Image 1: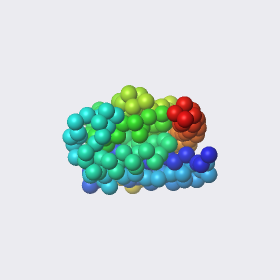
Image 2: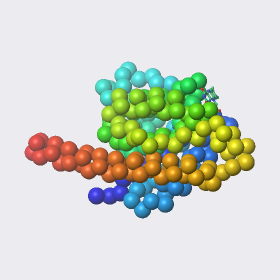
Image 3: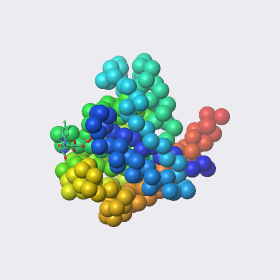
Image 4: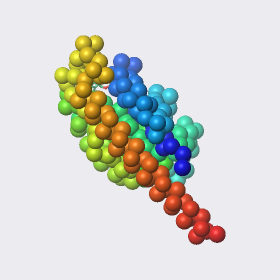
Length: 201
Ligand SMILES: Cc1cc2nc3c(=O)[nH]c(=O)nc-3n(C[C@H](O)[C@H](O)[C@H](O)COP(=O)(O)O)c2cc1C
């Protein structure tokens, strides 16, 4: 079986975003692993409108062309690491909208989070875990939380994420969890597909 493909989804899009810093850091660490393929998926490249379909794509095919391409993109991956900015104690609207614009393509795949903010994006991450469950994803235990002291020091250029040992350890644990679940669930989805084909024959 081929290596699992892991997307690092950049969950905020504003011009002055901090998201690029944790994205590049986690991608660099993830890319050192030989057992997974890693790709950055930047929501800036996916100009989805605010959700405007007759139903979730689980129930009715989406009409919007970007949405159709987005669903195909999500389907390419076996697992996801989302950068989780926290806006008013919640995930960003742009990330929730992008999540809503796919459905089955998220199913039975792991989701991990790199949160940042005053409490390391913990409130946004916890909400994203609940959303992930509704999408039949497997949200993993390990997470990165870049909390206020580290967040400010990195944003002000006083520190680099690479030099903060507890965050490097958290990143390794997160990637381990996502890679493990991605492998297991990829094999299980493949077994389901074979069983489905045998039943149809
Ligand atoms: C609209 C808005 C609401 C915010 N609310 C919170 C919050 O509830 N908790 C928090 O820790 N940080 C909050 N912040 C600060 C963000 O953590 C900080 O701006 C961070 O850089 C946002 O991620 P981004 O730069 O990738 O957009 C908020 C920022 C914005 C723009």
